[in-house]
Image 1 (cartoon, rainbow, N blue to C red):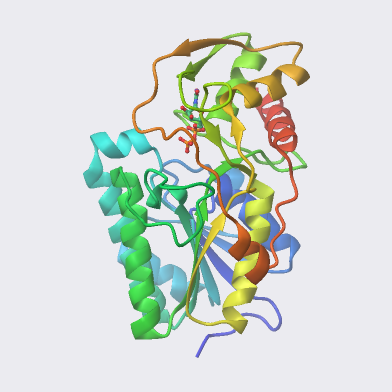
Image 2 (tube, rainbow, N blue to C red):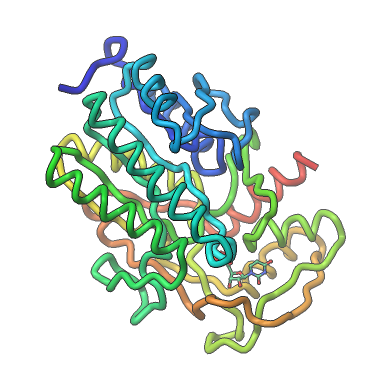
Length: 330
Ligand code: UDP
């Protein structure tokens, strides 16, 4: 039986709630009347991003602290964002990726079982698909990851699916395409160190007067630069709330792609920023980055029809909110 928290308020353990997407999720949960409790080792997350509930500083590799978190708070459901997520790092250091992303998830699943918590929303990635065989990529696309990061997410998904079948867990795996943008109020945003993602790099270059690198302009795309599906972080949070609701009415295992359904090239993202920043930043085309497919765009019909999710925020809003956040944080 799921333990209840204080009457009417559902308590959600947000693993990785001090990170980029997790912190936005906590704000969205609090707004919707949930009580978020953050579990985070602060290795890449930030204590200052935890504003909407208590913070338990702990590692998923530490089952005792994890058990204590479940014993201290009467958790109704879990959202799991805690992971390593730099693709190139995963190639150099696969051990850390399998340990944190796979073993960490197993520890979480076992802690949930012991605590009698039966609902999980899991942060997965389009990286589980590998090189696209067709586009847009729907959930039926074969999963053939090409990096340890992608494999670690796929392995975690596979464990979660098995726990759903064997142990009456209900879970939704949400496969993000390119998460982007920041909180509309400017309270939180993307704060990675090192930063590898396109939009924060373009925005930081525009604000600092430096040059951004473009990794290849000889791809088979209209302007030669890679096409990606940028989805606003607040749209992602909306999908998580809908997925959590969905688990109550449709128990079991679910997979949903989360992307806007539209692709934008690196050149278009650059142009969107330049339109706001008097032509900045300058850009230099450099060699292709290893492992970058030319085009990644989500088929998002499943989330639209089954969750009634509507990604509402445009690429311009991703760039504008990132500019507001990075401008403020400077
Ligand atoms: N990219 C780039 N310069 C940067 C960062 C990224 O040209 O400083 C390109 C990258 O090669 C890819 C796209 O921008 O084609 C999106 O990369 P990002 O790292 O943001 O997300 P990914 O698609 O790898 O998850």
